[in-house]
Length: 277
Image (tube, rainbow, N blue to C red; front, side):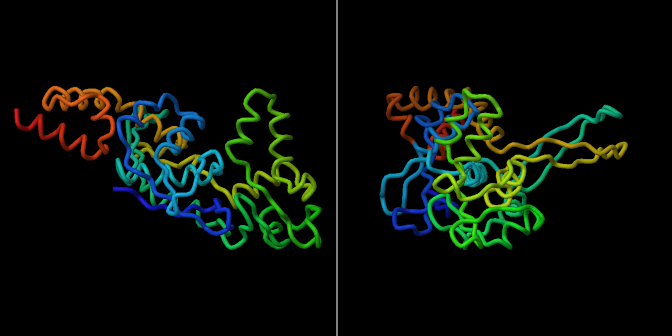
């Protein structure tokens, strides 16, 4: 069954909020996942996203924030809302689990997005007090048009791709320029821009605190949803091939036919075959 998800930053040609369907994963999609990078994510999303009005859609037009938002829904649908990872204490060497609810984490991260300030696809029009609340009123900032609002374009995959083969400084300058409307909407310093983007377009990439239950040593564990979700899909490929083999052997179906089965149907059929033996 498809999953309906409201996007935060994406806007239709009519500049209206947009919702998309995440169609069910199939083997045809899962087998093409060959990395954890953004290119692999965009390719996968292009294969499973359908718009509610059947209009053309490109995942490359999404912000990194909206991509993580979709991956969060995808992970909760097919795996679990609870994330569990085993750590080893570097003080007493005892293993312990770090666990949390993905939905709660994502909600806390995305609650800061001022959706009412979105004025176009991946574009914000922010009042001076919105910016000052984040970067501080002491920073001098040139605002768009009437000098009381700041126009901010959010980088999308197309912008990210343009920075792949350049130096870090060139990448920072390019992304800074890309956020400007017509190249001259603001003069935010890179550090201030990073703070503002974290507020209006957050991603699920952060350090989580965890305490060892044996010695109480505090640890910080890095969690990057994009990497975590894509690794999960890649890590299941061997089991996916077993499912395909079971169904092909039992029913005599072709690979092309099995590849189009919804993931949940394919897994249920494979489990029934194993249980009947």
